[in-house]
Length: 240
Image (tube, rainbow, N blue to C red; front, side, top):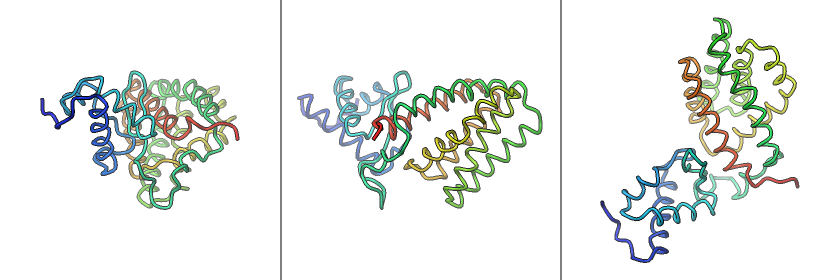
């Protein structure tokens, strides 16, 4: 193992590890939304015990830099400094509370996750074309750095997916709450520190999983993505 000249006491080791990880994040060697190496990999990387690695991750979690999802690992939530022109607490400024985000995501899981299965089984050429046009619209909006158009096409993409399930009840349920759904998607894009081009690439990954009939992969991606946004932007939101 390659050590990093750490002192023997655990507090010092934790401090050195957290600072080195933070430096990688601030230098964008680790990007917002990117999964960190596993605890085992970090132990090998820094030549320390798992206890020291866990303490370092807890330090970064307490500062809102890193978030951990059980069973999935730890992810970069944000850089230490806000992007230019952004207040340090802006990532919390949304009218969607933590509770409402969780409730709506549960609703979305019940509708959209099932729709993924049905889309793969039932979608016809028209449905597949609609989804293709939506993903192309997302890519174009990202290239233009047009947040409003990106949010619009993001909504069109997800609604095309649900409509392509060929289940009128699933589609009708989401149509009933389409205003909330559109706002929910728009807030995620607005609050994200990721460039629109990165968000567009993430949508392309989801699109390829769906069209490649990798339903489990698509649902896992959606779940991980939404958990990231919950941990980063909505976890501390309460009713004003």
